[in-house]
Length: 382
Ligand code: BMA
Image (tube, rainbow, N blue to C red):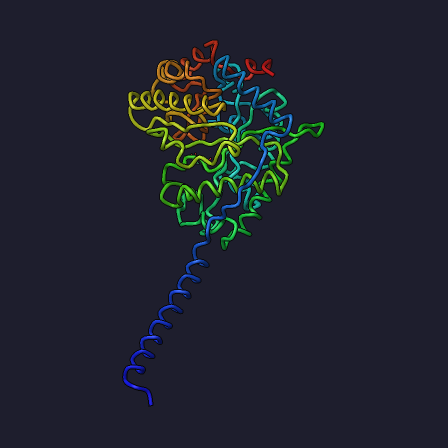
């Protein structure tokens, strides 16, 4: 017979044992719910190819002469027209006599193996227009608004997903499949004689805002950084995408600390960018332009990287002298390599001029400025 004392001790041990098992079980199940961010250092060289090096050098040279004018989807459609595969045009040329120097294209939904992007532009047409822009001497930059891999809804669906698509996460395999489709598209960008067209890829932009699934509040900075690094690594090393330079572009920011909070590291970023829209008054936009390009210049000079206004604009360009008085006056001396304006989608959503639009005369004046570079101006810059 056990003494009362031994009985109590046994009971205590049993409780402790059950408690320890419970803790171990919880630790195990937590691990499978939240994958641990891998710490392994990933190595990439995004500037290995001759074409990439040449593009980067060209961008540096452009920034010493002025800044290149860019427009998103310039040759895919404009206000009142769509590219029909026959006529090659842009709203910018219709107004000013020359095409933009920088061409933005969007490849959201390439990850789903769709025929058209999220704005109903066919990927075949995009490939064709990239080739044409390149042959004409233009520079190409590509943005990506991928669907949310966990919810399968749009890029604006903010269900938590980043940790699940990292290596070790439950949707990593699916993410790799998505990247394989993206890689196939990027690798197919070649000239008529088969040489790779170097492009600037700008994924996971505006991460310091909360509107995309990769944005602030929906993943930690560590998770974001790991997502970027794994993405570049998988594209560059696993899938052999060698014709891509990577641009990092937060939204309008308040400090250097904010800008660098999600920065994936110097080896994973080739160009520094910022997206600045005029959402409110002209005065507040000018303040943002000035402060952000000044900070960007400081950071980029230290890192010895080119920098650009990777997205900008005032919806409907509702101020008639906006190009010369608001925009140019405040970026002319900033040292940016280019400024890209968002798409001319429809009469309620456009950021470039078109014939008859109220800022179009001012745009013609803007075009004449010697430091604002259009397609013909950069053609000779090698
Ligand atoms: C946004 C808007 C959307 C579009 C998306 C990707 O800023 O223009 O209409 O789907 O960019 O191009």
